[in-house]
Each structure stands twice: as C-alpha cells, then as structure tokens.
Image (cartoon, rainbow, N blue to C red):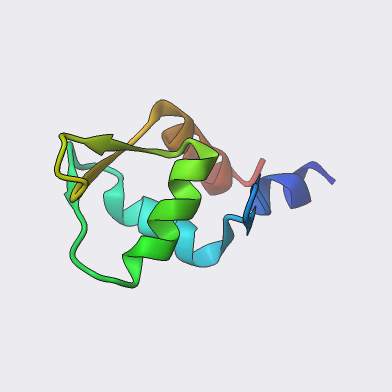
Length: 80
C-alpha cells in the first residue's frame, strides 16, 4: 500500500502524475531550469503545489528542485 501512496503523490488538484515526474527528472541536476515549453506549465503547477519545486528569481521563468522533490525522486528510484 505504501508504494501506491508514493507513486500517486496527491496535491489539492489531484495526483502529481507521470508528466510531472518526468519534468522533475529534467529539472534534477541543475541549479536552475528555465521553462521553455508551455507543456511544462501544468507540471510546474502540480510540482509547486506538492512542494517539489521553488521559483528562482523574480522572473517566474526559472525553477529549482527542492529537497522534498529530490527525496521524492530518490524514493521513486528505489521503489520504496
């Protein structure tokens, strides 16, 4: 049951989902990720709501992975 909870991390708007997880993986390993696609917007909204991302600077074009987001990706990789 714990795996199901981890794989379906919920926010107020619903589950994070695979698109958001793929986006988090793109952001990982960078100091800041510049949003370049409109398709990223939905993933950004969900990741921000879950506390997995934070804005970098006042422009709202750059995001970074938070410690919580990194821990979530680590748990997914280990299939805990």
